[in-house]
Image 1 (cartoon, helix red, strand yellow):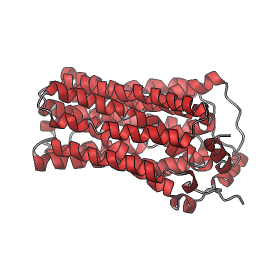
Image 2 (cartoon, rainbow, N blue to C red):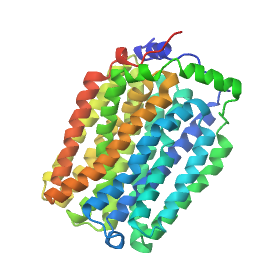
Image 3 (tube, rainbow, N blue to C red):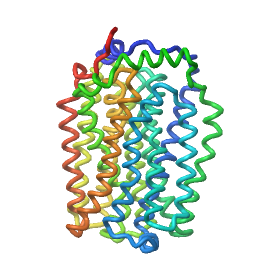
Image 4 (cartoon, one colour):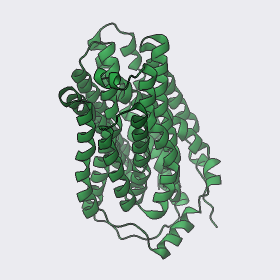
Length: 431
């Protein structure tokens, strides 16, 4: 028995039984979760194309700080609501909660195209953030329930590839729609097109809303890992730092990369969308490969904790090459390092989530801890958008904002090395 499986056995009391899914249906649901997170990232990052569009910023009379505030608005509500969503999915299941909030965020994205004031625009972005808060806790709850440790890296690699592909696909599509049809049409189209996803979701996913008896058992199992035990765990606090550090780079790219390529490197809005998309396509492909490769190494007897930590640290340190983009005078070299540095971060992507949200977390607490970790991820998104806008305004260029990325990447690598230890995981109350 591996260290990972020993830990899992020790920290995973028996949950209420559910009908086993066929292998094909299990992967089909994972495919729907991946498609849903892709849609969610299109709807959350389409704002980056808008704030790089002069007619949009002129319409709302935005300064660089206003642009940063708008880019960060989504993340504040997204982060706050994560904890509540984690608690909800631990008790009430995934299917119906996801369907309701998916509908809300798609409709609100479409309504953004009708915003007539900056205040209204901010309010709609806050509402989208609150509705999308269901995505990550629900998805990791479902993956934890349906994939064992030997397939977790691959499953998470596929799932996390969805959010990167959301950026990869969303950036050029949003930019193209803005250029050809205007920002209003862009929001309406990207919001409404995703609603089609509800049809297979309601058809394929089994109902996991527990009855009264199952609800009591679910609460009993959840209470074996108390909030007190969660908050005393160095693993949990370390994972907040790691998720923040990882998210800062990704959300900077999602929010500010198109503007950087247009304003500093002289690319058109459409070109900036294409190259931003390539950066996120790179991290998505590397994430799937790295998750699979780590699974193969673990299956051959390597220590799972050490393997995943090595991938995470390597991804963080390799992504520090983003500084080469800021320091070069050539646009082609800057674009190259933008793509390469974010792609290298993919070595950390799936393994980070497999380690911090599954392998080192007791099964009954996955939803709550994932929600707690997502607060840090959301804060990184808000901080990256707002802090980068402020640093841009005071320095007049993008070198300082990109140097801040380097600082957080090094912090994430160091925290992974020092704090991700099985003996520091949240404890289960055996009674």
